[in-house]
Length: 218
Image 1 (cartoon, one colour):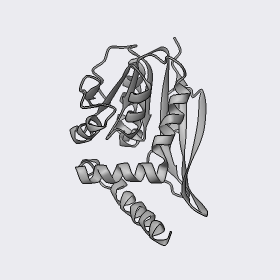
Image 2: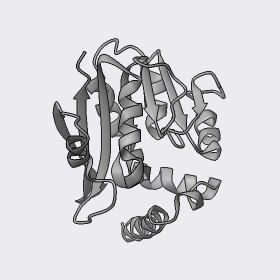
Image 3: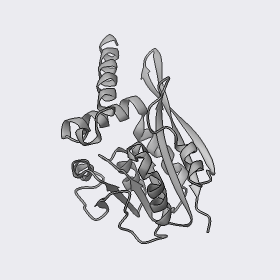
Image 4: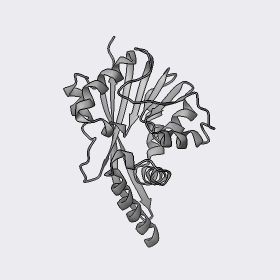
């Protein structure tokens, strides 16, 4: 157990160092594998993705995942949903996503795109998902980001945005609720999903996801 504890401490240290790097320094294969390992072990991201799918309900329609990255959440969405599209700006991350068994190198649903200028028509998606990617939106980009995101969302469509908040640590990107209010988006519901690392006989509470839901009024 001492070795497992040391591995978790090492992974935590490395992943925090990754987090605070410039975004263009985060997307080598080595860094992406580190991100996947940290996101799964320290934040239970695959389990959270299952929780997120349960919030979408039955037959949720056309789904877009923004900032899909290397595809931890995407792999669950792809396995559970029939009609989903995944976008990210990083070609390296999308290459890793497409190599996941759920995608089998299928390119049709994977799009290289900037989330400030979506290549989709207005009112196109029934639900839009973003897990962790909002921290990449700069202050001066936020109004454009929310205008574009709600533009491609259908009337009565839903946004599901989530950020992970490490226990006892304040980091960028955890101001979703305040930002949505500032930009005139009225939040319907906020859910919390706790993430734990099990190290028998101990359980380490690493933090929680805040999942914010919004419905676009027609």
